[in-house]
Structures are given as C-alpha cells and as structure tokens.
Length: 119
Image (cartoon, rainbow, N blue to C red; front, side, top):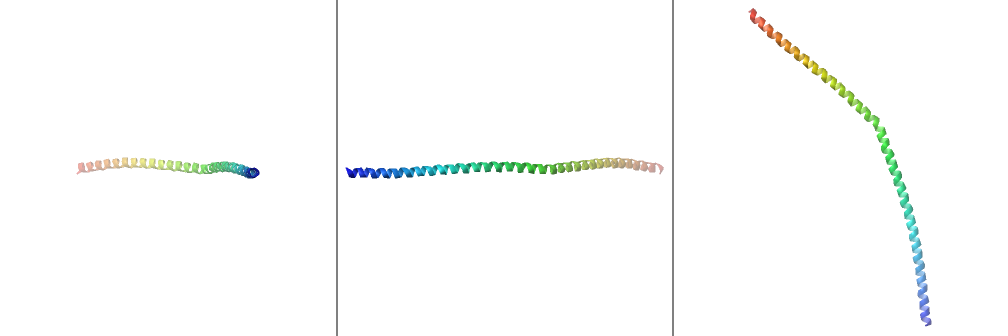
C-alpha cells in the first residue's frame, strides 16, 4: 500500500511538473501572440504610411505634369490654327489661279478667233 501511495505521489508530482510546463508553454504562446499582434499593427501602420506616400507622390506627379500638358495642348492648338490658316490661304490661291487660268484660256480663245477673223 505504501508503495502504491508513493507511486501515486510520484505520478502526481510528474503531473504537476507537466502542468507547470503546459502553463509556461501557454504563457510563451500568449507572449508570442502579443508579439505577432504588435508586428501586425506595425505592418498595418507602415502600409497606411506607404499608401499615403504613394497618394501624395501620385498627386505631386499629376500636379507637376499638368502645366506641361497645358503647354503641349496650347502648342498643338496654335499649330493647328497656323496650319488651318495656311491651308485656307492655299485654297484661296488655288481658286485665284484657277480663275486666272480660265480667264487666260478665254483670252487665248478670243485671240485665236480674232486672228482667224483677221486672216
């Protein structure tokens, strides 16, 4: 009986040691979870800062390029107007030359008729 009591006592001590180890493991796990939660929070804050920085950079790029786009647009508009005006001038010149050509052709026909009648 005494031997049985000693064995039970021994097993109880082992169980107590095991229980203490489980408690220590649980505390370590809780500590690890807290560390992970802190790391996740830091990552989320870092991500928010990165997103904010990207937003600012994007807006800065847009703001800095806007005047160039305005200048390019203005330049294109000016060149379009110049080309349009020159095209209109050329069309009028072609029209004028066409009228002159018709007038000269008529004069030549008249001159031929006059020469035929005089001969």
